[in-house]
Length: 187
Ligand SMILES: [Zn+2]
Image (cartoon, rainbow, N blue to C red; front, side, top):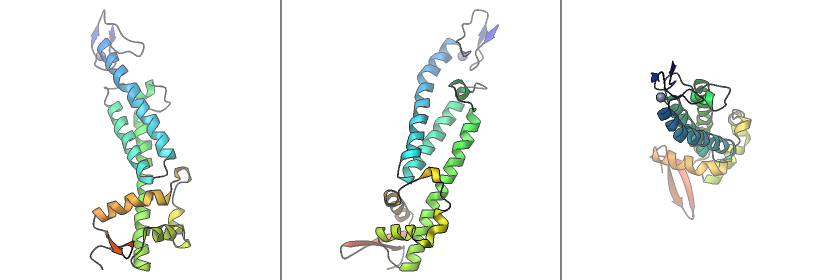
């Protein structure tokens, strides 16, 4: 007697699909899983190709959320295995969680560079952060970034500066026609 791999429904005349699902579960599978699989594939392309580190991070988060949904599809039924991946959903999850940690560390390093630049040089422009990031001073930080995860500092910096302003780590002052960033609470 067959039983649905997802909901456990069983019966002598229960019709199971090729992957062992009852009609209802198979229907849900057909609606959800190919779409989620597509989201993961598209997001991975963006993680690999986007020049903006923040975009990489948010797409990596989306992959993790989507994998969690796929994991919750049902019981012991490993959806990921089923769509032709060698690895199971748990392995995929821990892989992308590791990737998320690496990307977050890369972002933390940029925040460190920004604070270090202000500390060394006083109020600094966006361009001076970029120059400082590319200078020998921060070689130790650039060496930590993963070569597979190339990003463009000038495309990444604006988002990070906005976030740091939001967290009151730094603030922006207009000096002449230029915006200069300094520590929050300092002139
Ligand atoms: Zn079922």
